[in-house]
Length: 391
Image (tube, rainbow, N blue to C red; front, top):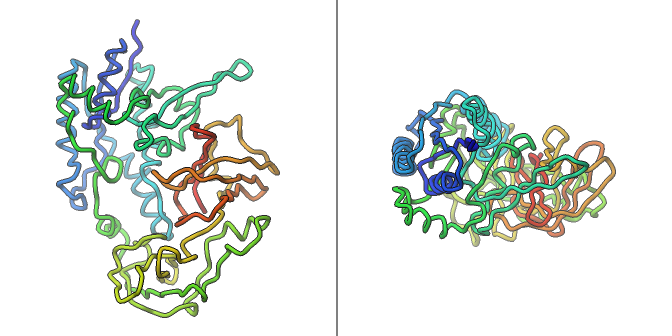
């Protein structure tokens, strides 16, 4: 009897080819579209309108001759993703909703819905791969980077568990994006030439300040430019001083001068350049720190401003996650890995140090825009080993 797979059909070419390949491989395939967002007032309507996506997903299912249904998960999405986003921005942190969306929606709510339909697996159009190793008679699943180096999406799945991975299939992970489009064209799929969507998982491309202003009120505050020589930098600490190296920089108003005003510190993130419209400087200004309690934004001039760079970061025990739990560091242990702190960032060599208070990641060279609330993910070769929320 054929294994049953529920494919998350998003209306894009990647999930369309995912369904096509699985059907070709002999699986019993069911297509399912997830409707997770109802508020179109903050969505830039020309980008990724959900109704068009739903229709495209339905057409692809018809072309493939597979059952199709749409499910409304907007309640769960609001509670687990949107509310979390607002809470994090309110605290002056920068969340990654796409990582959470995969952990909380696609591979939790959606997965459980699929299992109730008798599915053996769920499949998505992610550019990543799944492998396994057997240790002491037990199968351990591996999350591997996609074959296409320009499309690898393993980072977005960095919070998955062994249980979630055991039920997941990623058929296009072995393919290049160009190969996926070629397959779609040969199969005559309506999404073959469809432009890739951008923006928040399920929501589409949003104007973030408008999105945040639904709940976070605008509040005028000061923008302070911090000169290089006046800043407090931890880059000078020795590599053995993990706690100080890994703390966000401490800025105070007396370190610089007021050069403008902003509409709310919670709207901005470290490394941001656009959105403040402050000119007249020799080099571009970048956000190097925010203080949501005092509603202050600190900026540094130029891409080489040391306030943009840090060598270390800290992850609390509650936020530490190991995809490979068998490789989890014990207190007092250290291990070399490569890590990234955002999607598409090249992997950077680092050392993980497990201490009683949590996990430190010390990079071989300073990293730009390490931002509280984002996810750091560490790899061994092309395998994602674990991840955590940056403090």
